[in-house]
Each structure stands twice: as structure tokens, then as C-alpha cells.
Image 1 (tube, rainbow, N blue to C red):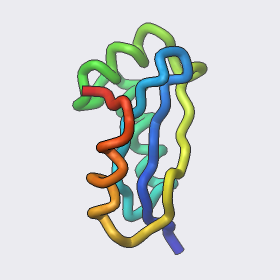
Image 2 (image 1 turned 135 degrees about the horizontal axis):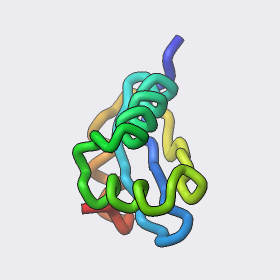
Image 3 (image 1 turned 45 degrees about the vertical axis):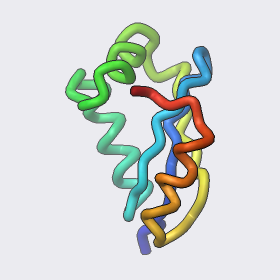
Image 4 (image 1 turned 30 degrees about the horizontal axis):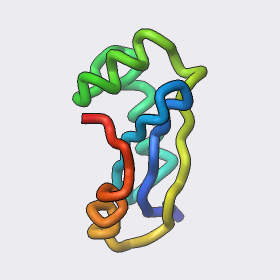
Length: 83
């Protein structure tokens, strides 16, 4: 069964975080990595940092397992996010 929740893609070099909600964390992380590898990720600043440094300085962290999508907006208020 797929796990749902809020996930952070963290740049360990800059401490910037890209937060997203996922209904299937594993599948969405694989998809995100694929798009980043191809240079097709919609968040331009994240894509640019990824292109400069590669995967080595990025880490996926599950922040909270939840079925409640509204938790993403609450957690975003406290994080230094990619824009």
C-alpha cells in the first residue's frame, strides 16, 4: 500500500527545502528525480541547483505521514523554501 504524506527534498549545501504533498511517496520521489535528471522539473531554482551540484547534495525526507493534504500549507510556513 502506498504511503501518503508531506515530503521535503532538501539541498544539504544551501539548506533550501522543496516541500510537496504526495499520495504515493515512493513513486513521486522516483518521478521527481527522473524529471530533475532530465532537466524538466517545473521549479526552476531547484532545477538549476540540481544541475549545478547533482544528486549528491540532495536528500528526500518524509516530514509527516498523513492523508491530510492541508498539512502541507501549515508546514510550509516554517520552512526556507525554494521559490
